[in-house]
Amino acid sequence: MTTIPDRYREVSVTDVEVPLEQGPLRELLMSRPVYRRTRYMVVRRAGQAALVEVVRADTAELFAAVTQVQLLARPDETTWVVRPELDPGIPSDLARAAADEPAARCVVLEGRYGHISFVLDSTPVRLHVLDVAPPHPAKLLDQVRRVLDTAEDLPGLLPVPHVVELGDLVPPGTTGDVLLPCRGGGMEVPGTTVHYLDEVPPRRDWTLLGCARSQAIHTALYGAPVAQVDTCPRALAADVALGPGEVLLTKCCLLEEHVETDGPVVVVPWGASFGHLREALSCAVAQAHPVATPP
Ligand SMILES: [Zn+2]
Image 1: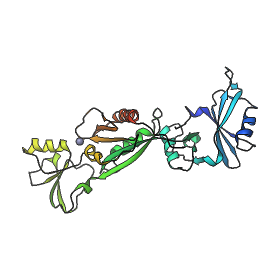
Image 2: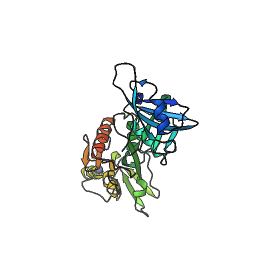
Image 3: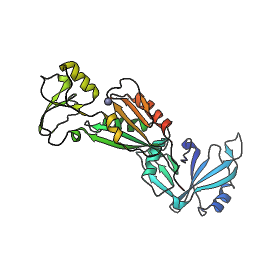
Image 4: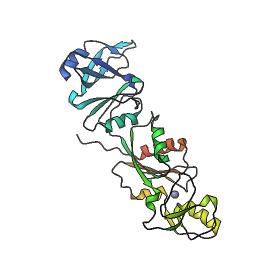
């Protein structure tokens, strides 16, 4: 079960002269009042750090007596990392910091703005993101990261990227004419002549590299469907194996303005807005059942 502070105002950092053990820390920290919002203390000594939780006496004053001290993470379980690119106020940034320190139960993050927070026993929601490229970077994955950068109200989400190169979907040995939905992304298919559906070129005996919506457009424009390699991320996502409690986010050409949830799979429109993505991430969190890591 993940523990992170509600807000990093709850965290204080203190250098101490006593061993970073329950007994000496309890004695020291109960001997002096703490600021009335302090709940967690990162205590440091000789290049090591540990995490304690304090219980304060009820008071309206600025400082409160400490009535209990609990060592939550010992020095050998705690790692201090300096990552200015991560925001300690964003749960997903704390999840990233923890994911990069798998040996530590407790990761203290000194991050953006010089702020300090921590994550203990990080069990983020693993969010598989299936996207297609080009463009590079894959747009949906990039958008997810940009939304998570400011997602202070969501629990920690850890994106697991699955970027499918569209060119890899072309069956080996394909030659002749290939039809792409549009020119966007600058995709090339070696050994073939590429045409773009949105430019409505003269009909050829081509293979469509696109999704169901492109096939429908082809039928509308040329009067008949055509041989197709389905590139719809939603269809490709069927091949991703999800672990217990994991969720998957992808996009589909057939959705225009709404987000769809199908069990652990959340689908956004092809041209999803940041609003769509915020909605989708909330849906994904609701579908996720974080699995506690064994002790
Ligand atoms: Zn689709």
